[in-house]
Length: 257
Image (cartoon, rainbow, N blue to C red; front, top):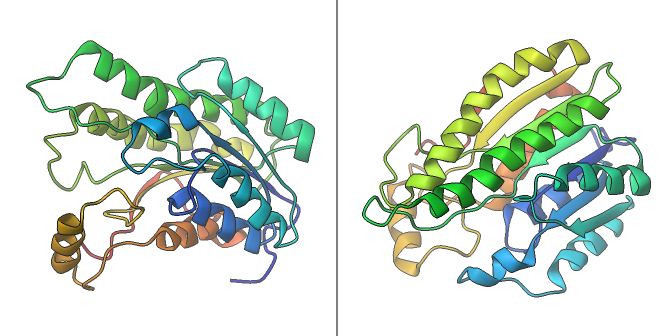
């Protein structure tokens, strides 16, 4: 891919709080291609997860992007707040100008088997994974000036390829993101915006047990787990001019698994 092929564009990437995560790889990949970067993160959610994150990681990821010669800013934002998308875009535009690439990477994921599934579980997942994503997309579309080069990329999961019985609230909302992708792509094509979703498969970002890592790597045709940079390279391609004719798709970037 040509160097600096995203020069002059600004990418807004949500869910960037850990160097081991997909979000950090997305920042690196798009910054290497010349895009200015605006990120969001939400430490209170990370604090509830077994992997956690250090307070300085989100800012360190931005510093890494700046070392690549691009501008990079960010803010902490709770995507379960319906007012957050407008605040995020206001901050991104004030710091870096108009956003032309939106990457919906942030997610809410908790263990929700049917035996304990409740309204609060469903609401918590819906508020971030679907409502937050949809409102960010709406804010992006309203503010995008039109022309060519507008990009929306959201992250899905493997719920269409196999059962995930312990994560019912999560898969229900991620399935909705896939449904949103197709219809939204048609709704915004006239403004020069493409809309796609990526299912990155089992990606090693620090959330798996050692047993899960071994089992899933053994099952993969390539004998390894997905890496954050695998997903990031696909997003970079979709964000570039080379990806201009791909829209309304759910891309299963899973190493054949």
